[in-house]
Image (cartoon, rainbow, N blue to C red; front, side, top):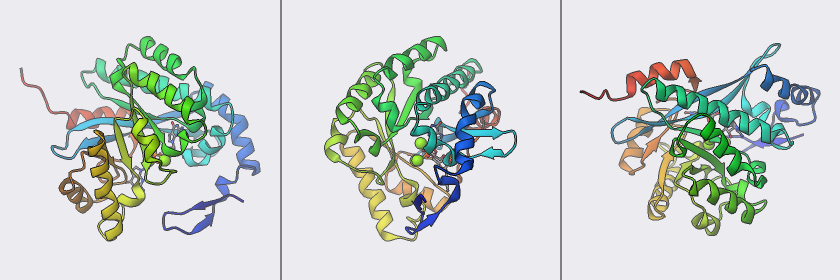
Length: 282
Ligand code: C2E
Ligand code: MG
Ligand code: MG
Ligand code: MG
């Protein structure tokens, strides 16, 4: 059994997370085909600047339109992919499709930065910086339009190699951010060495901050920590107006969450961007 710590702190058994269940094994055997048949699709969730509400970018989130099972969320197959060598082609598939979409938004006059989640295992792959560079060139996207979201725990396996890979990416102009900040093996010693431009405060702190004083304190401390380290800070999982307002008061830079916009297909994002991008007047 794989017990997952739930949002509220107790362990619950989630059959879909059992790596060795027949369903998991069957899904894994189908994922390569799913990539080739374009059954995988990227959804995108906007991130906004709290001061003015303007969009600052979108995060790509994978969905699997399975012919038999319908829409499968990433939590049900990513952990398994991450443990296999498939994670390399998978991550490159995601980056490539995110960049293709990024190119399309630029061509439509709606230039938008895209963020892609990358896995611990990708940070053991020394070819990642070159692979990313090739995809940027192929799709004519400048590196500052790409952000890679990593978790704190992704660095612990081989901190030296991870630092080398991230530094190469950063030197080429790709932005790096720390996802789910506050939930992993936080090492401030690692953090200060990493070429990171922003911290994403985990949704578990943000979603209860209007009721839980300790969560509010953690959020405020993280905002201060980020700013003192010269980083930006973004709150994940903003689900209501009250939370958004408090984040503004706490001087948080950016926000993302269902209250602002759910993850939606690319075509819907195009519409959303049209409505949320300030028109330039000529
Ligand atoms: P994440 O990167 O931390 O992404 C945020 C997750 O929170 C997404 O779930 C998003 O739909 C959800 N979310 C956003 N706003 C809210 C909110 O206001 N309330 C709540 N309750 N949830 C919100 P999703 O799409 O199911 O993805 C789950 C995780 O799967 C991601 O967490 C990320 O770790 C992983 N993932 C998703 N796509 C990819 C991918 O392309 N590659 C890799 N390696 N991992 C991915
Ligand atoms: Mg993320
Ligand atoms: Mg997150
Ligand atoms: Mg996550």
